[in-house]
Length: 296
Ligand SMILES: O=S([O-])[O-]
View 1 (cartoon, protein in one colour):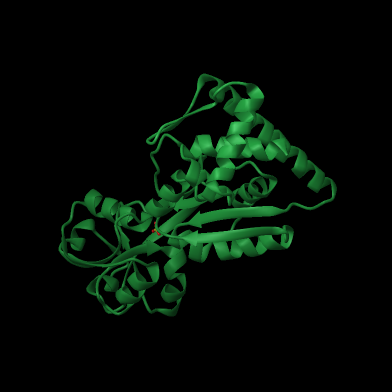
View 2 (tube, rainbow, N blue to C red):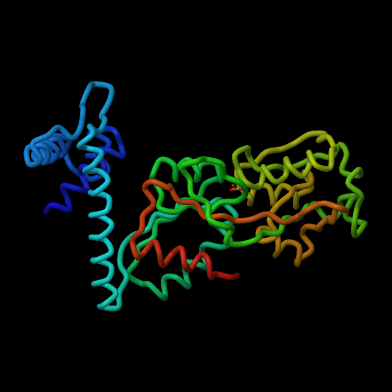
């Protein structure tokens, strides 16, 4: 089918590599090369320059790439409209989420989404913000849901989809817990429990500490919210975590929340897609719509 050949051509161009394209498409490399050769024979012109180091489009290849993208998008739209006619949205979505979103928001969101669209398969990857950003850039995910700021030209970041409240927490026996609100200076030389670098939670903690201008006496680092939370509840040090992560422990009195005068405790959750390769299937569109409307 011509649409399959176009998909192969577009994948080779976007991956700049025959074997990576073959792997992504579940085809053999000779099979992919044959499709490209047949396409070149059909147009009577070279579409791709191959050298041991590079796979690059020719001028004719660039023209075909532009139209092939439009053809594939039109084909998807036609397929989706036909599915909608039969009142069903099908397909598969790969979603990546940072830990706070992946563990505290996504399960509830997906449970609503699944009852609305039972025929959409979803694969979720949970990792820290930086890892999810890199996976979106590498085109391994259709959508990334992360915390904080993202500054890559090729990544499309629409306005935040949710606000998150951060809380400074400690074991209830910590000296800071005897006061309702504290001045920033009293946080001088404390022992902290942090998430790892690359996480949105760590970025927020670092920013918070820099803003109030205190030094950290010693720190312990865990690569999960759960680890940080348990360590703070065990009295290892203070920690800055999302309220979503510590809500139950605060209610149960296993952690105390410390208010620091004049500091900001809000951050945003954002949704990412790769500008160039963003999937526009109906399944992805419906998922994006759900993320925008969802409230916990
Ligand atoms: O998992 S996080 O905090 O980016």
